[in-house]
Amino acid sequence: MLSLMKNPIVIDLFCGCGGLSYGFIEAGYDVVLGIDHWKDAIKTFEHNHEGSEGLVADLFNETPEEISKKTGIKSRYNYWWATLPRFFYCRKTNCR
Image (cartoon, rainbow, N blue to C red):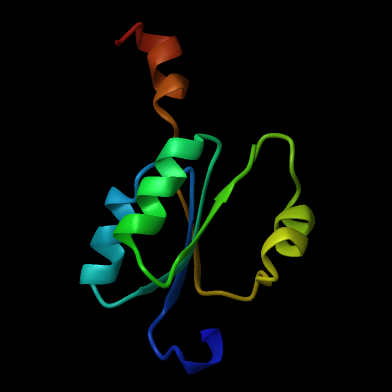
């Protein structure tokens, strides 16, 4: 499947349910992988983005090499996009 893609390719880190991935897809990108630590978010991501793989993983404790082994996806893609999880900025601003 990946070899047939002609659009720029995105891997979405901290993807949540895939809202930002949807924007990339609408802009003509191919989102091949979404990674988040929240299992329910990954289920929703995979439901919303058929053809994209979702992976439950802790990106603070796993290396790119470990992610590559789990998915078979190499790091030669156009874009690795990371959206900061909400707890990063909430710890600084006390938002809820």
